[in-house]
Image (cartoon, rainbow, N blue to C red; front, side, top):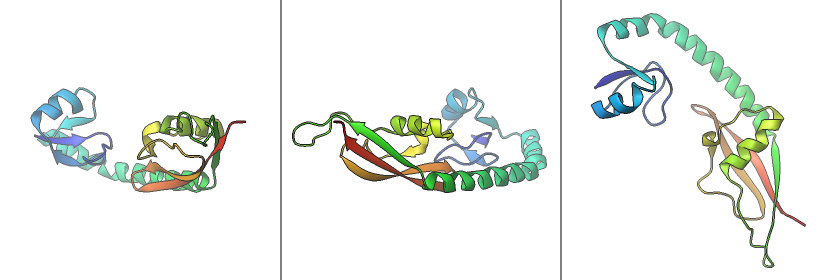
Length: 148
């Protein structure tokens, strides 16, 4: 089934792209959530008319994302966690913890934008990648210290 994406969807495409998906995925997930519309002749003509404004909007969002990435690259976050006798950390630092720590600094980062393969479970410094926009990423320094 051919659809036109209304939003960027990971591993599927970007807003305005015409993609082919299975009918069940389109009917049960994409269309009810207004993430896509059916690729009819009328919708295809309409998307061609607004493609120029979409490109301008995307360029503006990309510019803002680059600025936000520059600001994020200098951010250093510090977390304290309890440890056992052998410096084994109780708990971990998760993507949700990182996004919550960035919020008071003025960054609106969803936990899904924080790219962690697994939660941080070691004391010390780590570099965490934040996906700001499509292909724009930033590196945030995360330090985990022992709670005294």
